[in-house]
Amino acid sequence: MAIKSEAAAKAEDVPSPQGAPASSPWPASRPASAPPKAARRGRGSTYAALDLGTNNCRLLIAEPSHWGFRVVDAFSRIVRLGEGLGHGNSLSEGAIERTLEALKICKDKMAARHVGRARLVATEACRLATNGPAFTERVRDELGIELEVVDRRTEAYLAVTGCASLADPRAHSVIVFDIGGGSTEIAWLDGPAQGMFADPCKRIRAWDSLPVGVVTLAERHGGIDVTPQIFEGMVEEVSELLLDFALIAAQAERAPHFHLLGTSGTVTTVGGIHLGLARYDRRRVDGLWLQDENVQNVVDRLIDTTFDERAANPCIGKERADLVLAGCAILEAIRRAFPSERLRIADRGLREGILMTMMREDQAWRRGNGR
Image 1 (tube, rainbow, N blue to C red):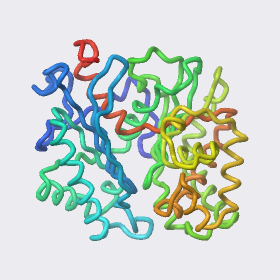
Image 2: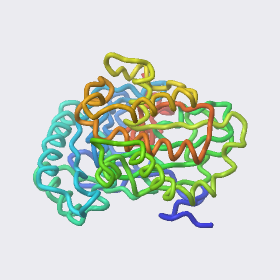
Image 3: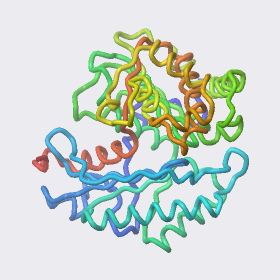
């Protein structure tokens, strides 16, 4: 059976995500056989990864270290580039202006940190919008930044690369998912882990990219006043989209030490609420293990809250109060398809996957670049 969006793929049939040449001020990601000069400088090498999604614009700047990489700067802002895509097919001028402002900050940060190699990717909003190409041209013309609009396969593989290090090393099967603003990537990692620096994409047995995310789902069903019936309607929509992948990966939960591994604002929010944090703390949430009943308790509590109550929660805030239940509905559909006693939460994902891919291509750790 073939999964839609070319989602059924053996790891040996799909190379690890690599970058495409770009005319940016920073060299785009290139194969390891021809690393850019900046990447060959050794200890002075600085890498940047930008993830422009449907809801957020995120930047991470890092240097190789002996265990992976050391973050030297970061930036994140909710821009809602894909606002309105749940009903239409074009990016609004307001969303474009908000995003350009955020990208200008990212450009300045990369220049200040003397970035030698960068990969700047855009995902579902730019893939879907009819004026996506015009937007990326405007970014290039006004800011000198070349955005790479990645396909769904690349996005799924980068997400796996970014968070797979948090998978239980004893687990012979893991379902990894990334709930985004406009799409949701999900992958089945099959077989035991091969080591810290091994390419986790070689474990991918199957993957899919569902054309639904927190922004598009909330816009279709409503995110302000969400009744249990509305919530269940969202779950049913996602479950329908998930069905083909769930059939392919039905054996995943039978393997030893099976568990779920999620990366997104949805799962980190669930973790923060479970911990009762007065202020979100990445150090406490990234890598957190939750039992299934812990997840269910948080979801049930959120369904019972009003918009104002969600907005007042320090782990949600006003900017995401209308999106969090749509994210929980996607999470619920995944949990129903793949029942698991354990969920591990990752506050890492696409940006980290981009950085790890570039450093692996450059053999940064073998050259002794790590500190």
